[in-house]
Structure formats: structure tokens, C-alpha cells
Image 1 (cartoon, rainbow, N blue to C red):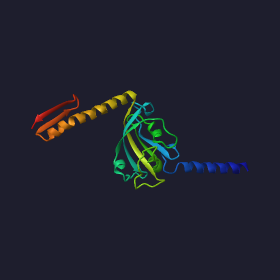
Image 2: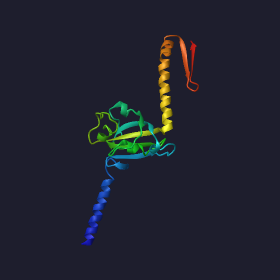
Image 3: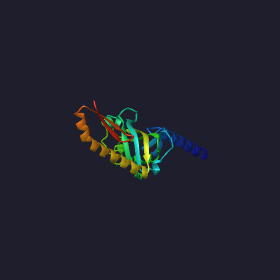
Image 4: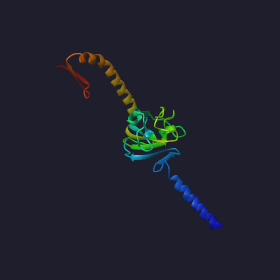
Length: 195
């Protein structure tokens, strides 16, 4: 009797293990039941996301079959600029982002319903995706900024906005004339010459 119990337990255990290795998350490290990730390149240099304040990355969203989503702003690639925070319970993309460091590349897979929810991307689900379908987010970390780097980055962004605002009237004038403009970013020097 004990032999039958042990054999049936082993068979049930083997089926359970086999069932866990199937489905859309096969080959991915699970974060939750419907959310997993796979590192494409794990560089481990520079700032870790857990210590960072701001994530700057390039990304593209694909279906679970690696075809483009119908929304060109997502399927054609886009830049992510995300303030890092403590993840919320459930399938929060932040749980995946906090596993990254400068230079890493990864793919995250998640149910499309959760991916496009207010908790994550907060955009309308593309028309070629259905409820219950999985979606992949391919991401390449360009920079993870700590608090000092983030302050410097904000300052630089503000300078660029002011520079564009200040130069706009001059550029409109020059474009209406026969002038040639050259902006040297190294010295922040503007040179104007007649053509």
C-alpha cells in the first residue's frame, strides 16, 4: 500500500513539475504568476536600479509571438524615462526594473491586461492584442541615475529647454535670411555666418 502511495505521489509531482515548465513564462524567471523576465545582457556595471532614482531606457513592445503591436508608438520603439519607486503588490513592472543595472538588456513578459493597466503603462491596449494574451517589453538600459546624477540631469534638461526657447526667435530670423548657423555643443558657442 505504501509503495502505491509513493509511486502515485511521484507521478503527481512529476506532472506538476512538467506543467510548471510550460506556457508563456517558460524560459523566464518568474516574478509573479503572470510576470517574468529574462536577461539578454547582464552587464552589472554602474548604478543598480535598487540604488537609483531614475531609469532611462530604450524599449519596444511586442506580442508574445514577437510580432509588432499595432500601436506604432509602442511597437516602433520608444524611450522610457521612469522615476524608480517601491513596487506595488501584484504584477508591477517596477519589480522587474529594480533588477536592472546600467547597460543591461532584458525582456519582460506579462499579461497584456496588467501591462496596459493604470499600474504599469497606463495606455490603451493595442487592437491586435486580446484580453488574456501575453505581451513582451524589450528594454535596453541607457542610464540609471542616482540622486545627484538625477539632479544634474534635471538641470541639464532645464538648460536645454531655456536654450531652445532663447534661440527660437533668432533661428526664425536667420532661417528667413541667408545665414548659416553652427552650434558647438562642446563650448555652447553659437556662430553665425553669411552665405
